[in-house]
Length: 316
Image (cartoon, rainbow, N blue to C red):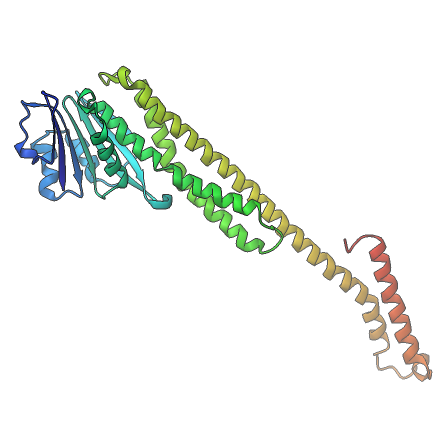
């Protein structure tokens, strides 16, 4: 599907004009959005706009790294949108040149719809140009990163308020899952941050100085997002270490308890083993009160060892 916005030289806005019917002589500039294009519509990138073959190839190859390429007077941007809950990025390609903006994406995106609607609501749209439209698109894409990052922050805050001593293994797996989500977010946010840094410092885009504050604002948002992701990763590292310490401490406590019990029963097992031997000339075997005497010794010995271990703090 292709939709168009035409801003004419007499400051009129015309929406949804078929691309091949646009009068470029009367148009001040145009915005063309390719959404889930057909093969015939993809061909227009070459036959109508005459974009560089390498840029067209990047549009057809899914999920390129965010970047900026300059082809004479046409600037090609590879951007990333974020699917719901930050599950994976979606590529958005954009061409900005004299008199046009072309956006290209394989999936319908809420961000593009909001940027389109926001442009239509601007009463001074005729005073804006292709660079301002590029800013609107980038700003909407970046604004939709925040819900995914904030959702993870809320989840981490819930973890902090819970008792950590129980269900350690389940919590540890949740922490690793969150770290995996943060890693995916970081792979999207950091390249976009680097791209915006390059945009605000480039000297090859005409008119950039007029819109520098707008793009700087988007870059600031990406800086904030990257700091939030790094902060959350540090928090998950602390949680991971804490959970692993709890697990290790719990294991040590269990091993210590089992060791103490084994130690107590070692002399008792020795006594039982001695009197369980089948020798006939054992004096104590003929003693009438021998059984109860040995049991008493074993109870006193076990109780004494338990009391001594308790005093030493081995059960703490």
